[in-house]
Image (tube, one colour):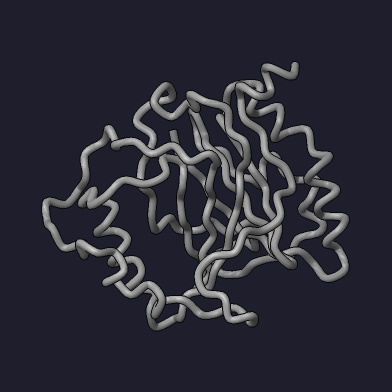
Length: 220
């Protein structure tokens, strides 16, 4: 299994149309029903869209199943061809899929949430350092399905509630013990750009849709 996270920018004055197109799109739901995806969620913040989904078999790119919204999205440069969806780079997880059975939800999910935050550009490498160390030293456990990804200095996080906390079944890649015993000593408060209202860290954003295999099978 592979977890995928993407970011897109909506054209000016197209926000409502883009969200309507996503809500009406049948392909995401079909891919879940056909067993290609385990779960998928779309989230919106200002003029930006975020996709989180879990591929059970081969990797599926968003431009192959979300064409209905592409007319409302800005072209991103940076490669030989312009792109509508930019892959975000995973920078942290507490847990990771070992198999479909390991990753399948064992209890009902009450809510799936997306959240965003901005890092100070000069603190991006430090943020990755501390989080990779925590992740691979298995310094402490946290929500199984939580994940954080980065594009530029923007962080997007995916969460499920109620949170499931369990020991990872995969081995960590580090044998060091560098994670601060008290996580607050990592001074994450110095890493984030504050919001206009003074808030630090992440804020939850609007969910456009979310689908999960067992929930769809129950409603079919």
